Image (cartoon, rainbow, N blue to C red):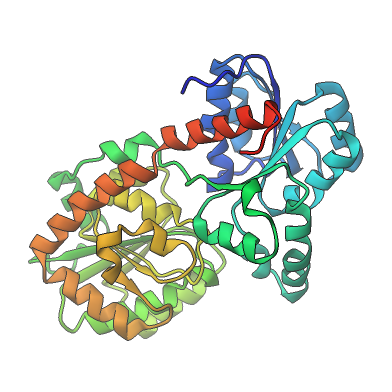
Amino acid sequence: MNHPLRGPRILVVLNALEMDAPSRLTLPVIRELKKQNAEVAVAAWSRNGPLASSVREMNIEPEILNGSPARLRKLLKTFNADLAHFHLAKPIMVALPLTRWFSPKTRTVITNHGTHELAEKGRLRAAVSTCWFPKAAAVADAIINVSSYEESNLIALGISETRQKVIYNGIPQKFFEAQRDQSARSQLINDHFSEVDKTDLILIGCAGNLRKVKNHETLLDAIKAAGKDTNFALIIWGEGPERENLLTKIATLNLSDRVVLAGQSPHLEKLMPSLDMFIQPSLHESFGMALAEALACGIPSIAAHSGAMPEIIPPDFQQWLFPPNAADVLATKIVELAESPSGRVNYSTTARAWAVGHFTEQHMVSETLACYTSLLAGSRP
């Protein structure tokens, strides 16, 4: 990663210093900038959070703007950024236009992670984001999309393709290095499914916030149907507002001994290798981080044919996509994959190689810095 970034002043603007994937993904970019002697400032448009400690470990004191244009203006004046990079919807829709107004000479770039999470918060917010997000994005000097799917959405809204590029999210190296450990698998099964018959058990995983858009209900319906032909157990990692509803559905389907909501885990790279398959049933994914992490671990994966997920599944394994909400189709695919050990081995080898070629952290960082270099030189990405 040898880009001529020596001494530029880079401002990174997040929505909040939380441990969500888009915010965490800025850390390796910031580390590389620091290595290359760039001056870096980090600001949270809305609020503080646990990510602040990781920022401070790089000797950067984050600025908490609390949604204040005055604080943003002061930061831009004192830091005098050569380039500002905005992540997530609120900073893009509010802080970006303000930055163009307060500091016209500052080059601006956004990373488009999509706006579907705002749509979950009500029709008014969905309408505002649909209308205003593309208008705000259009004022940026460059747009990084986390998938071709998101790029095509902006092109359809009239934003020039020449101002955009696709940089896939980067998966940390620890996922690529993860190996299956039979003792760890046995421990995971015993911790959650002590009463289940272990003979030919197919261990299935799913990871993501427990929200409606993640479509766990369809997965549970499919697991119920697939269970007629397969000895399975399902672990769902994540937390969110749908937990109680999902627990009720699990009980209603009589799956309490076969399905567990395991909560958040900071070490999925240690857990995923124990799986026989991974399923991502989401109604929408701008990228599909957990799906890409599973592939990096070499886990055969099934995903809904929605959002960017067809881009994440290897081209030769597109048959493992299913129509969203089609629980019967998903159930059939679960059984097919479970009954093909040789097919899972082949898929596993291809999955890891595909992830290495497309979703490494190193590639994400290198491409992001190349975009910065291009903008600072006065050209488009």
